[in-house]
Length: 353
Image (cartoon, rainbow, N blue to C red; front, side, top):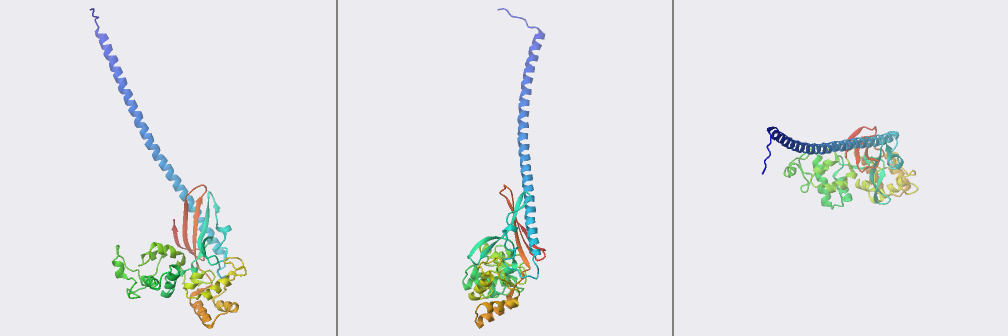
């Protein structure tokens, strides 16, 4: 066998080449790892950017929706200011029911609608109407007597006499200044609320928002949702005979025959409430003369109508609820503003949903 001698230089060359190959492999591995890390960083960074862009879009959409909803409130206030303060308010007024003024009004990239749920005395069905609600068409829970509250709960909730009395008494005891029960059983005062899961006491002052009713013993979320469109905390407590529903007029204590005649008078010749031929009462003093001049009433009915007119009725409204809903074109989201304003447009309550 013949062996070939390898020189020192050749050996060094072989080792150098081998080292270069190893270093190239290491560099390639490092480069691949670097690419992997950079790819991960890029994915994470891209995801963060996308989230921030998405958040920015949502904030921008919400801002637009809020401004559009506010535009609806301003439009409603403008319509209220057009009406004379000295003119009786009625269901036929433009601010109360007008699709052309309040339904899907375009503003920029979206629309607003000002609407409310209305119980139609003609059809006996609750429907959506476009306009503003006067608070004087509702029962004021700060001023209503126990008798009025009892009738409210019997009519709206169909409570029996005992259930209606207990809930009415709880409301009276919540708002009165003393700590004594107004009825021996069924009401609630400080000691009853102190024994609840999260102890508190009766307020012993007027309700500041209608949602405060949820703190009153016996009131549930379900009952409140059914009741909220019939109650208010604004105004003197007098009910506008031109705008109140038959149910609210009955709550005041007027017998059915009288309530039916009031509604019949308001409907006008076409027999439909809320149209241009509606009749209105110009003043409280004219209620009895006008009705008795058209319909027959007994002496007791005249006396009842006189008493309730003097104590509980008005023909003008001073506080109004505006519910403005904004939507963007081709978007599912919406933004709602619910507020209460006085006849001058001053904001008394504001809530965004």
